[in-house]
Image: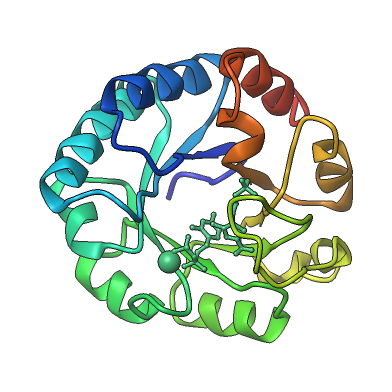
Length: 204
Ligand SMILES: Cc1ncc(COP(=O)(O)OP(=O)(O)O)c(N)n1
Ligand SMILES: Cc1nc(C(=O)O)sc1CCOP(=O)(O)O
Ligand SMILES: [Mg+2]
């Protein structure tokens, strides 16, 4: 199964598909190894269109393509996998729907027991967050960086998320995260390729 590691870019919510494609191309050019399509706001037709384009883009750059929340959309665009949280499909049902080769990610917030259960249910990676306060998700529970030292034995990649920026990402990598998932710290600005390159280089 392909490994989730390095810079994990997550798309910002937008209806502006042209800008989204430009920004995602820049993130992939800069070195993002995983791309998640996350769009909570737009209509289903545009979601399918955006996801299809981004799937091709990720594939053409050798990056993994993951769809947030929506197992059926992941299947429709032949994504590498899906990311699920507490309000989404269960890990086991996502795994059953997408098959043994799919990458199934599970949000585990600040909860190591949840991470152990997710791995037992078939998760390919787990995510802990929010490691810093997040402008994208201001109400997210805080997750201590020490979780990464305490979760090595899980045997799957551990992704950090929440408020990660060029300024603080080094601490997260030093704490042991296998990947850093970033929205605002990557896409809020015009220098996406440069930020991606800086964040990706932390894993060299
Ligand atoms: C890599 C990664 N980690 C965590 C999340 C959050 O998932 P969830 O808790 O289901 O919240 P929403 O993203 O659906 O609002 C994620 N999407 N990706
Ligand atoms: C989608 C999401 N999930 C989180 C969690 O803690 O599970 S934090 C978060 C938002 C990540 O965006 P940004 O990089 O802009 O903070
Ligand atoms: Mg979700």
